[in-house]
Image (cartoon, rainbow, N blue to C red):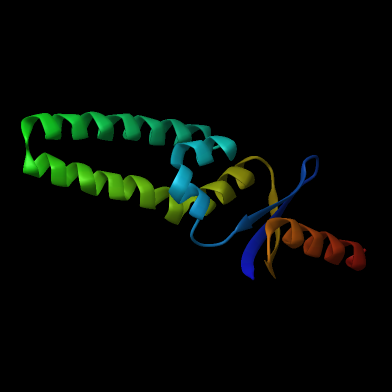
Length: 125
């Protein structure tokens, strides 16, 4: 079971955001950000990816140990930052788009979190 924050928008309905580490963001980086419509973050991650690849090429061609170490550290940050911050970025995007936090719940997946909150909303009415 995982912890989810469930948001509601008056036109678009519910969205559930898992709390904590984001495995999809770790493995798919800027593609994950595009799918989640985090356009600026996706563009920034893509730009950093290009820069790191260029630096890596320069490090190999010049046999620069320092540049290789810095590039490796950059790649580590490049992969970990979205995984650690991705769900927070999604929460901020939803709030900026007019969603409001309804409830934090424990559920096996986002769909079940939404069902749980929507059922709670119906029973309160």
